[in-house]
Structures are given as structure tokens and as C-alpha cells.
Amino acid sequence: MCGIAGWIAKPADNLNEAILASMLKAIAHRGPDGEGSFVARNAVCGHDVFLGHRRLAIIAPEGARQPMEEPACGLVLIFNGEIYNFRELRKELIGLGYSFALDSDTEVLLRAYQHWGTDVAARLRGMFAFAVWDASRKRLFLARDRFGEKPLFIHEDQRGLFFASEIKALLRVPGAHGPVNLDAVWDYLAYRYVPGPKTLFAGIRKLMPGTALIWEQGKVREVRYWSAPDRQPLDKAASAKLIAGDFLARLDEAVSAQMVSDVPFGAFLSGGLDSSSIVALMTRHCSRVNTFSVGFEEARYSELKYAAEVARTFGTTHHELVVSPRNLIERLPALVAYRDAPVSEPSDIAINMLASEASRKVKMVLTGEGSDEILGGYPKHLVERFASGYQVLPGYVRNRLIGPLAHALPFGFRRVKTAVTNLNIDDWRERYVRWFGALDAGERERLSVLKLNGTHAADAPPFDAAPGNSTLRRILYFDQTSWLPDNLLERGDRMTMAASIESRVPFLDHELAAYVSSLPDNFRVRGLKTKWILREAGKQIIPESILKRPKVGFRVPVDQWFREGMRDFLLEHLQGCSSMTRIYYDPKVLDGMLADHIQGRQNHEKLLWSLLNLEIWRRQYAHI
Image: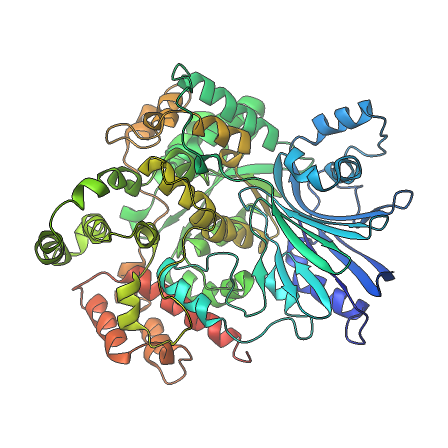
């Protein structure tokens, strides 16, 4: 796990080794174990090549320095991530006549590119973002992993192409960003995160997951080499004879593959089904596993007792951490800076605190992230099945009767209110966003005074699923191509790398995802049960009390904190004279929402958290 940065561009006085060093310094937290750079002047067509690397040593810590060069074939590689099948690829490449000096996934990746060229990404099993300078072909090749576990940001201008693991590194390049991207702000008000390829910085974009970028002779093209398997309709010939045991064996294999490490490792443990399953399988392969859990001072939101039960069951060395509102206020600005974007979920801060605690003992952790998006684990995956039937009801019944009744329900009926509100949205593109988002198009029109070009409708998912898909597969595909990479995985990467620790997610093994996608829908959602196949498989490995308890989720009680300990902090940022984003909104609408929440009439926690974080982000980049 590392950080990479570099460019291929025409020579300029302000594009030099000092700029590359500054870029690497900006992402030093991603790689505290070493730094390296490569420079080739006038490499091709009057362009210079600059490549830089910061290293967090997980595999072959004493070797595999980067940039890794192979002068004989003119290749230079910088690499962020882990290739879990590197030993299988190494064996295959040895059979093809290649030799190796190290037991390192970096060297295997270099040889794999040497043999397969631009088709290499499809051969990899892992999480990665990397760049290869291929001098013999005068080509710069970039690639990002399938689900977007590892980040890669791009800037292009008349000088050339610039890239980095984090936006903060690109901001060190003179002229690499423009003003605030107001189109992205508009999207942010809907999603609560910025959907790719946009960022909040004009001129900087994300390389999309499952995509490679190729620079040749001054021309740039992007090639999507993989799409999540739920994009396609289920093959009607798929066998339904597959059982939970097959799934468990495949998940176990993914866990085992991701435990490859030459440094101490552990797991984040919430005590829920997902992380408990990962820990249970880890203890099959290692007798000493460290587990780390975070809880809250408010007992009703804390899962520490469940995590402790799982830790006792499997004999892990267990560590606990308790978070308070004060921790959020103290850490939030710094973590917005680490993310280069608003912190979209309050739980991000708890995860960062947990990562900081874990970094005292280990350098890598496995987590249960991605399970819900692959297996269908959210209430919306149940409710969406009824969307078409509900929308047969006359509009006046839905909007004038059911909607207002649901809106009038008190705080405790949050999920019922959300379900009814969302089912009243006919356009599935708006509805999918609204499940976890903040505002639909009409609500944004009422709140925001931004004047933008083009449509104000929520963007369609970046790679839309087949229209003939089931409702479950369609919403899962949206989750896998938007909510997951642009929110959860971005969160996981930044909050752990800020503490110089690596996180791995076995549920997002692409071979496991393909297997699950080949099953009929009822292997994921059956009746009122979500993640059915994991629950069935879990009967073999985890306590019954964990299997049967309701899903709590990693929920931070921010609704209560906004009315109590964080009230003044919230109001100063959104109503104070120093607010930089208040000009984006109709003040009467905004102030009304603040009053409704603080006085307990409505729960606007998701929206208010988003607006607070956008304001913190804007203050940090006041110069743009």
C-alpha cells in the first residue's frame, strides 16, 4: 500500500524535481517507509516523464523498492496496492521464460505488463492503481482496480497528463486545478458524495474503477476492462444447485489470499455478520489475530459487547476504542483535508480513530466492507422489490395522503419515512440516489440557488445495468458502481491511509462477486432476509446470537449530537458570518431545516452533516 504521483508533459520551468518531491510529501502518510523517483527528460515527442512513489511496506519489506526499473526492456513501474494472485502469476510467467529476483508482487506486476501489455489489468486479482512508463512503445499506461478500492486522480491540460493517488498531490502542480466545480456541488447535494469521474475541483477527475488510461504520442484514451457482473441479466441457465457451503469456501479462499503479508495484520470487528464472518475465517488460517472495535459513549449505538463476544469465541487479541462528540469536532477538519473532500459519513471519523489505534499493533487489517453491496444487505434492497407495485397507486394517494402521513411521523420512524419518501420518486435514477442521499431534484431546487448549465437531474449511474435486469440486480449495480467506490471505498482508503495502515476487503474479491452474481436473486434477498447466502453460510462458523440479531450498522448518533454537543459548531458553520457556502442556499429554507432538526420536529441529520462538511472543505480551500 503506497502513494504514487507523476506526469508526462512538455518541459517547463515549474515542472521539475522539486514539484515531484512536493507531490510526494503531500501523500507521505500513504508511504512512511520509503520514497523514490524516476525522471526521463525528452522521453518522447518533447515530453518529460516524472514518476514518484511513497512506500508502505507490506510484502517484501526489505526489497521491491520503487520506482522499479527494467532497463533491458525500457519499463518503469510505480504501484499502489496489492496483487493477491502474484505467486500464481509468477509461476505462470516463469513457465513462459521470465526470471525473478524477489518474492514481490511489484516485480510480478512489472513482468506481467512486459508480457501482456495493456491487457495486464484483467489478469490481476487484487486492489491496485499503478503507472507503467513503457519507453520502447513511448507509452504511459495507468490502471485502476475493478471496484475502485485504490484511488487515482487525473489532470490534463495543454502541457500533458498529471496523476496522483490523492488530489492534494495534484494541487502541488502549478495550474492543475480551477475553481470550485459547482456541477459537482449540485451532485453532492443529491448523493452526499461526489460521483465519479467528477471531483469538487474543476480540472481534476477520477479515473473510474475497472478502467485503464493509455497515453501515446500525446493522445489519451480510456478503456474499461471490467464491469461489475450485476450489470448483465442473470443467465437463465444458471444452476440453482449451488449451496451456502460453496459460497463459504470461496469467501474463505478470498480471505486466505488477502492475508498474505510480511508484517503484522488484524481485522476491524464491529460484531455484525460481515466482520464476524471475516474474523472467523481468518482464525482458520492464523492462530493469532488482532481485532479492533470502536463504540460510542451512548450505549444504544454501541456494538462493543457484540464485538467482544465474537473476539472471545475465536480467541482473538481484542482492542476497543470509545468515541465521543468532542472527538468528531476535534478531528473533522483534519480528516476533510485527508479526504480532499467533505467527510460524507460521521463514521469516517470513528474509522480513522480505529485505524490510528490499530496502527500501534499492525500495518494491515481486513474488513467486512462491500458485503452489503455484493450480497444485498440494506433495507432498500428489500423495499425496491415493491417499487413498481407501489407506484401503480394514483399519484394523489401516494403524494397527498401516504407521503404527508409518513412525513408527520416522529424521529423514531426514520426508516419508514425514508422508504415512503423514496418510493414516491418515479424516476429510478433519482430514487436510487435518494436512498442514501440527501435531497431529490425538487428539494435541491428549493434549497439551492446555484445556477448551472444543463440538466439538474441526478446523473445516471456511470455504467447503467441492463434495463431487463431484476430490481435487485439494478440497484446492486448502482451500489457497486457509485455508492461503493465513490463513498465507502474512498472513505476506507483515506481514513486508514491517514493513519498509515492498509485495509483489505475480501467481500470485493471479483471472482467471489462473479460467483454471487451467477445465483438467482433469492440467494441474496429471500423474503424479508437480506444477505441470505451469508446467513446460511454463517451458521457453520459464527455464534447464533450474532446471526439472529438485527442489523445495526456503523451508526454514529449525529442526529442527537447536532441537537446537543455539536449544536453551536453546526450553527456557526452554516449560519455564521464566516460561512462560505451559505451563498449556495436559500437562507430561509436552510434556517428552517436547522430549526426543525434542533427542535426535534424533523431529522435532517444526513443533509446537515453534508452541508457542514462542505463548509469545512470550502474553508480549507478558500483560495480557489
